[in-house]
Image (cartoon, rainbow, N blue to C red; front, side, top):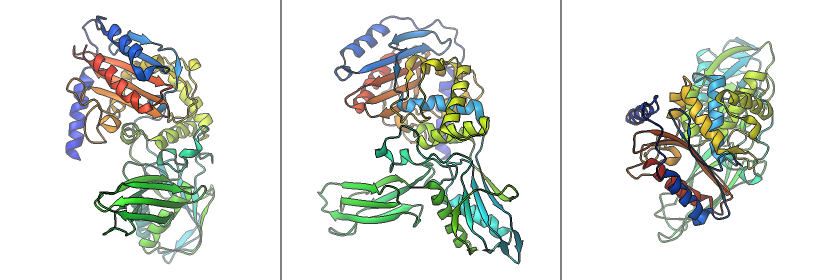
Length: 487
């Protein structure tokens, strides 16, 4: 882990040096526009599609190339560039999320006389081990029994769980998980509001597959309809969570020689998910709860007995941007709304975001912002506005954290290369492209920074919409970047 961090730092510092004010002239036009135009006009998979491309010189923001750069297009996860910049500007890179334990009762003879409140304030990084630590803290205070209820308070945000345009088919997915001020994640990827399910083949053909849920919890119910197949058989597994329930049905076959499969499933009602994990931690620490698990609002006269702080925003940006975490984006939108206006909602958060973006020279009159992640097909952003943002943020004190969070082309390791770790591995671009990917149905986007053969850094935004196959867009983006990098 330390080696990976050092490698990432070396890559970042080397790349960051190219973004310092440059004395050389703006990149000569030569045949760059001609090559880009030829690809965009002749690429078969772009026939009937729309391509918006904007390229600027990183040193002065001058437009080097433009192809429909002012046309509003669906940004997919390139929307996260706007969300990350606004969040860093509003909240600051050292910002942390708090989770509080509170009570009205008194501790007498190792017994807490009253209710215990678990109040969430948006932390998307809470793990089972964090709940274990909270339970340990209570035990340190001498508490062995709680006479009242365990009450989860998620009122820091509103109770709207899904963004307005989330497709119903994404409900069970980890990237479409419900947003709550009190939630939990299964691993250090911090896919809040989800569980990780690992399926491995049984010992012999005909056995049911072995299923492991992380975190280990009975909050979800697994119905195992799998079968271990022959070594030459196909791996065909399906995962389905029933609507409004936490029953997950897993069916299909898995070859006996298979390494297995992992899947992340969004839970129904993340507040109760967090409460269930905390109740489990209390039990494991020998703390007896007499009452029930409930949701409610913490009384104003309650006293804080313990506060848990999340990692800093600058650290959270790494899994957020490298792995394109939708839940983090929507949480940051609600958090901006809560901090600035006192209301943790998409409506207020997006208004704060729009206001903040104007500080970077963004014309918000030409944008349609419906969420923070880009999962909505109603979001509209011109490529020229994204490239303008990437120019402006270079002047901010938090820019190193912003740049550090972007996926790096061709670099192995998901917390370095992120969503670009398997792309652009050729010598002229590997390690020289820091960019945010984006994919939703019929849409592929890529925006960021590239160090060219001449030693200059160019800023680019490539937005491909109305594709028959969004995966074909990745290959087109890679071709475009290769052309840009070679100049």
